[in-house]
Length: 290
Image (cartoon, rainbow, N blue to C red):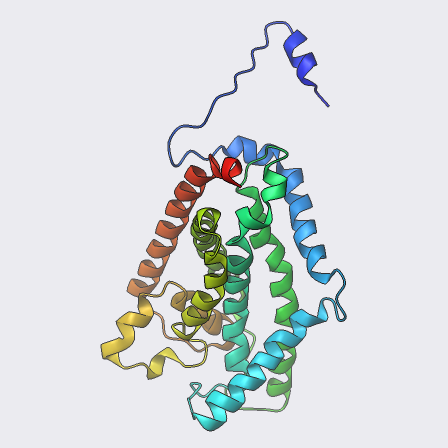
């Protein structure tokens, strides 16, 4: 390890320490230099969820199954909402795959400064590594929640149920909407982290906003049943496109068009870029007020 004394004694070596200028100056080289720390943060986030738990990773398998059962009873049986000819459990599980990954990212990442104040006060490292590590660590949870969907899809396919998933080349495109969800959730979590750094009580508001956002996303209803007069409201939600893309990739059913995809990608880019800018501005002073 190179010590500061060694740096000072090195002939012709000059060490310059300066504050960053501008709202959007990402030091990509610095992020690469701290890649080992990123892996440690991912490991910490993943292990801390199973510490002192009864079922451990099984919670990630039970959560979508139990939620799907509630949706199937309340919205399928009682409310009679259609599922575009897709078996109810498959329809809800597919939507929850995308949504759970998104909500887990913003719920945990939105409290970055609150939950890591003790760490930020002791040592310097790029603060944005923390929300990025959360997005990466939750990919493991996503993989675990993919298991019950595969099991239900196999059951319906083998039983000859009409509308069941059929494996096709479209499944190879699944990483694309998953990447968009990662970018979108990172942008939203950066905005929330910047807000909660100053107003700590906004952490409690995150859960309610996430719940409201879920009902504005086509998780429990198909977009094909939304009237044309109100469909623009659904498309204004940047999470609608990746959820529909998940159904297209995994179930072969979905309602997507190039204009809606372009709008969703544009909103995702805007939230991510502005989130980085706001996060970088807040991180300069948040340690002093933590």
